Amino acid sequence: MKILVCIKQVPDMESKFKIAASGTWYDSADLAWRMNEYDEYAVEQAVQLKEQVKEADLTVLCIGSERVKETMKKALAMGCDRGAHVADDDCAGKEPYEIAAIIAEYAKDKGFDLIFTGMQSQDRGSAQVGVLAAEMLGIPSISTIVTFSYADGRIEVKRELEGGVKALLKTRTPALVTCQLGLNTPRYPTLPNIMKAKKKELISLPVADLLKVEARMETVKMYFPEKKGGGLVLEGDPGQLADKLIQILKEKTGVLA
Amino acid sequence: MNFELTEEQRLIRDMVRSFAEKELAPSARERDEEERFDRQLMFASLAELGLTGIVFAEQYGGAGADYISYAIAVEELSRVCASTGVTLSAHLSLGANPINLFGTEEQKQTFLVPLATGEKMGAFGLTEPSAGSDAGGTRTSAVRDGDGWIVNGTKIFITNAGEADIYIVFARTDKNAEKHHGISAFIIEKGTPGFSFGKKEKKMGIRSSPTMELIFDACRIPAANLLGSEGQGFAVAMKTLDGGRIGIASQALGIAQGALDIAVKYARERVQFGSAISRFQGVQFQLADMATQTEAARLMVYQAAYRASNGLPYSQQSAMAKLMASETAMKVTTQAVQILGGYGYTRDFPVERMMRDAKITEIYEGTSEIQRLVIGTALTR
Ligand SMILES: Cc1cc2nc3c(=O)[nH]c(=O)nc-3n(C[C@H](O)[C@H](O)[C@H](O)COP(=O)(O)OP(=O)(O)OC[C@H]3O[C@@H](n4cnc5c(N)ncnc54)[C@H](O)[C@@H]3O)c2cc1C
Image (cartoon, rainbow over all chains, first blue to last red):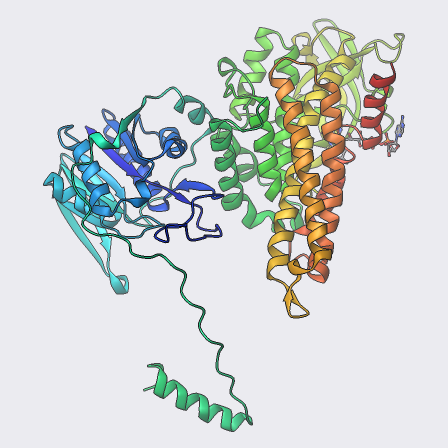
């Protein structure tokens, strides 16, 4: 079995973000980087599948600068067999369609039975990449999975819908799934596995070889929301205060009908 | 010269940090209050992560990583829970490393392998009621008896005692020799008849790490358990402590960093006189000093670790790093309590625990006075 897992390196979300000079993305200086949280679920699930089927070859793919190799090493230490690094210093400037196209171009004649991606990235949050890549490859995709099982060329997954409802879906491989919080608990890359990861194959491919589409959309502006004006201070005795509050809640919100 | 961590070292740091924050932090306060050691959490899970044998060769069950990785691991554990930090340090540096340094191939296979894999836990028994800073005052005795030794005596203040499976114990084997020359080191397993545990200490800090007495009452051990040669015990102890000091220095560094992080976060959030207290220069200056001292300690600790990994002499550097890092931990945690004000003094915030934990780093594996003695003697020799 051949498995592909696609991961992205994102800033630690606790960082203090600044808008870059371009005005269309955040400034990448002075940030700590880590694996996109949803991609950790994807890697864990891919590794579990590999452990289940025994005979499997698991590739981790990541697009970005030299810096992203460290995050790829983590995926290798978690159990991926080899890494495919798509060298691109302007990954953040590409829209989801282009990213999906790069992945599809890489994957197209490699015969992957299953492709795992995160549900979305923590820094862009488009949730488009996995699903678009599957379309480009002409294979079924199931998004935001919270359970996963595989047997005999079929997968069975659950998706979580609004209001706590779940849906159970089945499909044949090859297929692509995007992974949601709750799917699993990603393992820690153990120290011996971190040491071994450096011996695993990690090839770099120039993005120009894989990008064959043009962007269809562009980010016009990235900005922090303007600070809202101060709150409303009600004054008066408690009876009046309650009346005023009820009035406001009725008029301005749906809290009271 | 390169001050950057390697990719592996960064991955190890991130891994241990996320383990510490997710798994250790939630129970750190409770374990401290209840003086409770949690073997699964504080040792078995470290074994699963491959931390119990970081620096040992793969052929002995280790991970084959360097001392900087080890320092980083102890630092990151201690940033959140100093008790777990010392559990690892006492196990690895004091329990396992003497076997790595002085053991025969057979002793390594029998004892080092299960220690490195974390199947077994290690401890180190040097201190006695009348032999603290002056280890030459050891009174515990071992007398040759056929193909074995009979050990009698008491060790006090032993970290990991009761929990550990394998103990490195120092005993006098020659009453007539000059005091440092008549001591030998032994490997003694828990469960050996005549070996029992005494009082469990009630401590100021690192309360989730057990500290107990070891009692040897006509305890018979096989001759094969002599570690190093007869009379070499004092050298075994001193060489072991050189490495151990890197562990304790890392523990102190982690405590300081943990307290600094909390103080910075708190100062940015706490509002008094209409602004975050971090806006007050008086507070900023304190934070600046804390951060500077912590960073200086880190450079010294990593330097000592670098030397240990690269076969360079490091006794001086590890004594200096331990002295510097432990005094930094005490200063930084005290200042962190100050920055948190009344809240810092309560158990609702971890800085009071960190301040209590920091104190021990100035005492064990050689008090600050003994570190100065080691450094000063070498300087003026
Ligand atoms: C929590 C805890 C865990 C420990 N874990 C272990 C362990 O796992 N294994 C182990 O073997 N031991 C352990 N110890 C023992 C520890 O290493 C000793 O407590 C320490 O070495 C000091 O010895 P002492 O307590 O007898 O103090 P003393 O040696 O009596 O020292 C008292 C004071 O005199 C000072 N002093 C002594 N000699 C000199 C000198 N020559 N010049 C200047 N000042 C001097 C000391 O610095 C100190 O301030 C532990 C202790 C504690 C509290």
